[in-house]
Length: 412
Ligand code: LLP
Image (cartoon, rainbow, N blue to C red; front, side, top):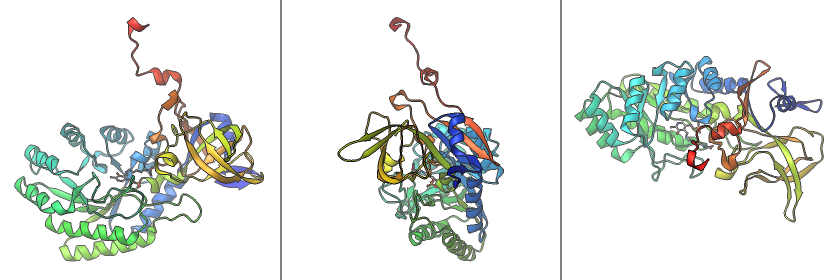
């Protein structure tokens, strides 16, 4: 976002004019930021043959998926619907990874029929796959290496108490099942969680995965997951992606020497690609002074952006309408009948009723975690490409909220 002549612009588009045209609250994404992040990641891992698969749970608008495909990225999905969206967006089935957790075998079979690349994370399912398909369906196995590389307990998935992956201590069981059914173990996978800050620990996890791979001679790839952290405010920690890329590439090459065979590396970033591209624009309804603070009450809430309440996540907030206003502390709160504070005593340019505030880093897990709580509609979405704003999802209406409900005649 740029500030010139007291007006904020994003990707060359005036931000307040977006609210005038499309209303508030509004999610806005800048395509150029997604491309920049993809290219940065791609070049950080250029030392090793690799594939980047966008973990689309972060943001699945079909236009975002199409844009991501066009810039040369693959796709990681966790549900059949995500898989179908990927196919509709034009991804080839074999460019789509399917990484489910606790789904039924029927769902796995449907993904196989659609031609996706399978990634399983429990032993009974692996056994069932062997019984049903033998060696005919290549499979990747998700390992839990038991590490904590960053993030909080809600978003870490590679530790011993996590429900994800097959424990590294059960490696012998994977080998036994693989041998029993002549499974084609095409790859090993780990995803240790969101917001990796400790590169050393992440690389320890990678080393565990590579060594586990020695038990499977036909391996073609190792998937190191996503979780690369972007800064949420000035000075915030972020994954040192260039350092991680060059050290991981070196590890992979050492392992290739050890195996006497090559393989490629896969990565599944979600946040890294889309978090910084997105902003949520909201309008201020009320300024309320209390003995504790000054609230700026906005026309949004935990129904639109739940990360601050759910993870205590920090999102920078800018007052787009009053860049020259005196800086004062405000607590920004939503309109939901719950405590949905976005920020407490945050220094902001003076906020007035009617001003438009912008939440930063709202591209990942923003609209995707939105709900209709309090029967509020979800916001519209706009994508900025080449200096032009395009509506990519209309705002929901009361009709949308009623659409899936069935009126019983006896109650009418
Ligand atoms: N791969 C797998 C198997 C995953 O489960 C996830 C995220 C990713 C990749 C992408 O992780 P990322 O690069 O986006 O950190 N809603 C939380 C994050 C939960 C992530 C769930 N899995 C948040 O808003 O922080």
